[in-house]
Amino acid sequence: MPMTVIVTRDVPQRTRGFLASVMPEPAPGVYTSGEISKGVRERIWVVMTDWHAATGEGSVVMVWRDDKAPGGLGLATLGSPPRQLTSLDGVPVSVW
Image (tube, rainbow, N blue to C red):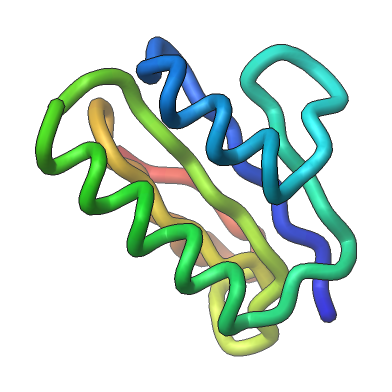
């Protein structure tokens, strides 16, 4: 099970409370776990997506190991600015 990291900015307290209930929060707004399965990660993202669609508040970035993605990192975002990973001469870079 690969490491998963979620970074939040200006999200409602409900979002922070939910994430803190499923992952440790080593720094304010940063949640991480080395042992979340793909199914659990996807369920967390469904909750984040539903709540963000309802309020439109804040932004959330989730990163996990994905061997098929550029740089071996999967990336999902909510809010502004949207980001994606791409490969530039074999180096993963974040684009807006």
